[in-house]
Image (cartoon, rainbow, N blue to C red; front, side, top):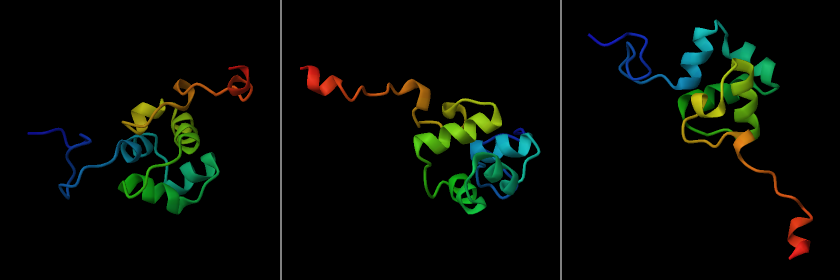
Length: 94
C-alpha cells in the first residue's frame, strides 16, 4: 500500500506538487504563504497546479519562506543562488 502522503499519490489520484506538500506540511494556507512571499494567493494556486512556473526570484522567495532550496520545491528549476550573477562590466573587458 503506497504512503498516502507521497507526492505521487493522492486520494484523487492526481499527484500533489512538492510546493503544495511542503506548504501543507508546514501548516500554511495558500494565503499565508503568499503573504510571506509578497505575491497573490492566486499565484500560489497556479504554481501548485503546475500551470505556470515561477521566476527564479519568486521561486527562491517561496523556497526561503518554506525553509527549503528552490530545487526541493521546484524540481528542474535552477536555484537562484546557483545562477551566477553577470558582471555588467565583463562584456566591456573583452
